[in-house]
Image (cartoon, rainbow over all chains, first blue to last red; front, top):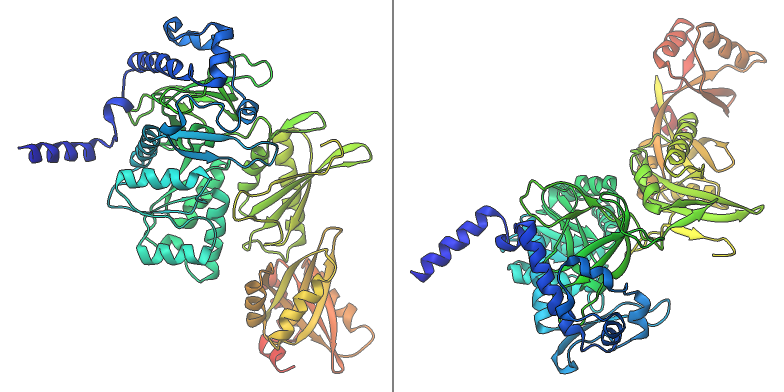
Length: 449
Length: 141
């Protein structure tokens, strides 16, 4: 009898395509009630943290004083600097004996930051990732390969535990060594894979060098791409190269890692799990909330984390809410693909420019390859922008006037997008820097930068 | 009648031409004719070799942006006005010449030209019974 029930339950779950139907399709009003409840609990926990106990005292914040989501406005923002200055354990809300894991981000610009996890935190995180993967059709019958760096980088263990929770045969291939990655894909019959977009492109090149076409010669059908802002054009290019559906996957180490917000099958915005975080989008200059649908910086409050809650954490990631309901039935709001970082912004001749705007234009040209490099220099006291881009191997290089027309057309379209005319230079394939990790897209050689 | 010519996209970088030619050398491919059209940022190297197909795949394997394009190579008798009179035939027929270059072979001169109206160019060759090179002719050089 019990077996039969479990069977029926499992079968239903397969059909309706939700990992946690009740939570994922919860009515908005109920979801908001749940958020208030969890916020209260989180405040109670955070009163034990050396950092927040001080903040709460100053702001007179207590669990009882939280009545609605409006009360969040009484909290100050939490900055990356706060995490740095309380390195390593100053943000902990539980005694260290309850902490079972620590992740740390690189400290290239000062102290590193750490994020602490209890066992429950790790379980919840794995659940979040499993929910994301299940959402796009990954099941326990899939073979999942993770090309993320392991160790401190959360894309490794984060996906590992999530995929295992879901029941996938999980291959912790880790980063780099493309030929070995390809051997695994072929030998183990990998069906789902996680890769940084620039690395996915690199992997496709290695497939080609080895005389293979990943869209025909592999069993790949699902790809998770994230950790690096990328455009719709780049996604489509990756989908074509591999013959897969590629889903934008957002995470950040301060919010555990992968699993914060992923795309569903609609591929129209990323569902951000609002039973885990409260989302705000603010103007990075005025710090006021932006109008619905406008682009701003995402600010997140964790409401389902014990060891290290964060309130109103400024992510510096730029996005906007996508209005309306999603046909997939999930009620958690959708954010647009990350449009860059509020601190990645280049100011050239007084114009605010994000590298992703340039990428978007370049990816539209079938004559161009995948790599580009933006260089900003001061020439005669003027900011000058140079955009170097690799030619695709499909372009007819015999035709000088065609190449000239191409350069002009790229310049013109870039000007429409970024409002200044960069100098466009076509270069040979394979000459621009291409890292196996995050691609280097901008070189700022100006003296004051 | 038409022959394949190799076009190579060359970045303006010291030593790049040498690198490209070394690739062909290693494959024992002989360059019959070469010309470079340059701009301030890149050049287009055009080549006739003893084995065009082999050359283009060797270049591509070395990540050089190269492809084949069809050109016509006319072999001209020695003579003061043979060049001008040959060009005149094409001009009279209203054929646009995209680019051209000449090289010498034994006592003859070869005029290589590229046009976007290749059919009309054949017509001129046939009507005037001009001598032209076939791709096989290159192999024997």
